[in-house]
Amino acid sequence: MQTLLLGYGDIAQRTGRLLAAEGHRVTGLCRHPDNKPVIDGVQLVSGDYDNEQDLRQLFDTQWDAVVITLTPSSSGSQRYHDGYVVPCRHLQQVLAQSGQQPYIIYVSSTGVYAQENGEWINEASETAPTSESGKALLQAESLIGSLPTQTTILRCSGIYGKGRDYLLKQLIAGNMSLRDSWTNRIHQDDVAGFIHALLTDIENPQPLYLVSDNKPVKQYEMYQWLAQQLNVSITSDVEPGPGPRGSKRCDNSRLQNGGYKLKYPTFVEGYEAFIDSWSK
Image 1 (cartoon, helix red, strand yellow):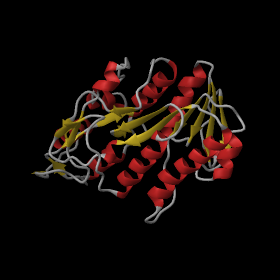
Image 2 (cartoon, helix red, strand yellow):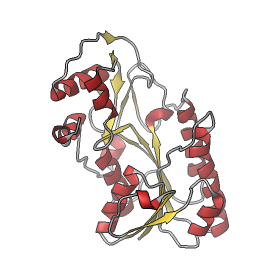
Image 3 (cartoon, helix red, strand yellow):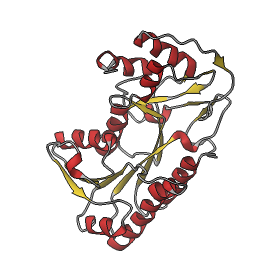
């Protein structure tokens, strides 16, 4: 299998490593290959996924699969539109011109949901994002879903793991607000692991998955547990009501029923895997 990784951040690198270890041919597109870690079996190509000419040159190669993990690099009011929507429009044009029909996986976010009363949500739940990033992601999802090829969209909850330590640093610094709202998490290794499974193991992948672990948790409970592991004190009161990202509980039944077994079923196992060695 020949796979193209559009965007070559943490999740793409982990996915590439899993595929290359099995002998699959993997190519990653990124702006600055020299700044990326070297992974045996992964070839890096310099270019911008928001540049149609760069994409067109890539599709001189016949791809079996394309994994899309986009990160806005610019600033300003258009950053999410330019970072999420524009590359998908370019891809739409390039695929039409090339005639290729690779299997496409697009990594999105549960930010496309706006529920704030602790509702359980699944793939069929209403999407009504209020943030600019959520609106742009939903528009990008629509473009991906309209492509004339098999596609799967992954709506990931809060991704955490090695190198994603902003929350831990905030706890150490005492810069946090406790809220009585629901939050959802997924470990970086399980995002990459599920992408790998979709590409190699899972028969008849669905067009949409919620990618989240097995246990939604109250935000204040998770913060208090983390503070205990870090040996820091939290003195702030628990504020009522939803946080800036709402309050919802993600139902990952479709992911589980597809046959993928989470490496880290809850945030407890996930944070325990690296928090002891975390450098403060």
